[in-house]
Length: 228
Image (cartoon, rainbow, N blue to C red):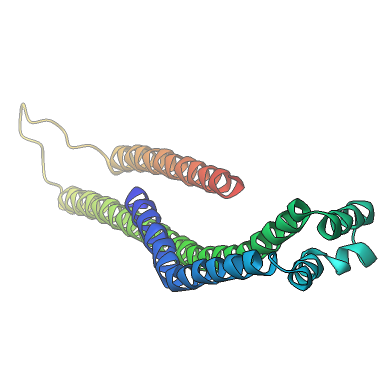
C-alpha cells in the first residue's frame, strides 16, 4: 500500500509540474516575440548616432555601478557600451537574459508550490494508511485474545464441572467398581488446573512479548523513514 501511494504521488507531481509549464507557455511565447521585436529595434538604433547612445544607456546597469557587489565590472561594462558596438550588444544580451530569468524564476516557484501540495497530500495518505494498518492489526490481536480467553474460560468451566461431579459422587459414598480407576482427588484436579493455567499464562506472555517487539521494530522503521 505504501509503495502504491508513493508511486501515485510521483505521477501526480509530474502532472502538476507539466500543468504549470503548460500555463506558462503563452508567457514564454510572448517573451519570445518581445525579444525578437527588441532585437530589431536595437539593430535599427545602431544605424544612427542617437540610437547608439540610446542603446548604450539601455546597456548600462546604473544600479550595479552605484550599489552592486562588483562595481568595477559594472563600470567596465558601461565603458564598453559607450565605446564599442560589441559592448552595446553584450549589454543588450545581458538585459534580455535578465528578463528571461525573471520569467523562469516565476515558473519554477509555481512548479515547486504545485509539487509541494502533492507531497503534502502524499504524507497525509501515508499517515492515514499506517493508522489503518495499526487499527486492523490491533483488531486481529484483540480477536485472538478474546478467543484465547474464551477457550480458557471454557476449560475452567469444564474443570469446575468435573470437580463438582466428583465431589457429589464422593459425598454420596459412590464405591469404585473393581478394576475401575479411582477418580482424581479434588487437590489433584486443582493442581492440574493450576498447571494448565500456568501454561496458558506463559503462552500469552510469549505472544505479548512478540507483539511488543514487532511494535518496537515498526517504531524504529518509522523513525528511520522520517530521518531520511
